[in-house]
Length: 147
Image (cartoon, rainbow, N blue to C red; front, side, top):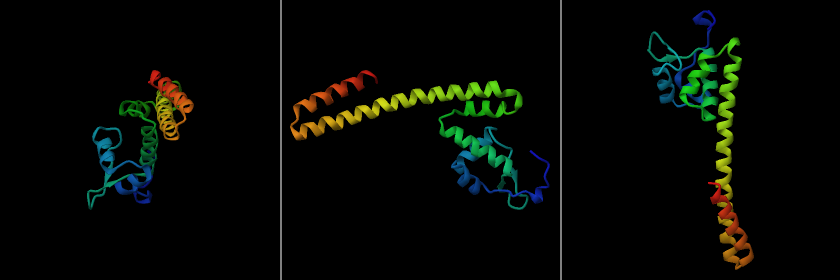
């Protein structure tokens, strides 16, 4: 962190950081407790947490990464390897997580196809369209085989 005069820094409350990052206040406290962020400065008068802009930026980045499904372990790895000399390591971390997302997208795509074929099946039954029903059954079976 830069050595700016604390009086000149715009400090954020936990509520503001929660709103900006999308992380709940309990999650922010948890991340501090496990050492993922922090230690967070406290207001000398009230004892409330006060987050400096650099920490808020880090928390927003962690929130974005968490939203991709990254584990706390991977978030720690990310923070531990920030810096110019760690590009290869971070690139691998991001590629590994992108591959995990690709697999998850494929699983979800199959489940979506299953539901669409089930809807087509019931539409065909309501219409009394045996040919469309048969196609829908084939689609359901195909999707099930890829579960």
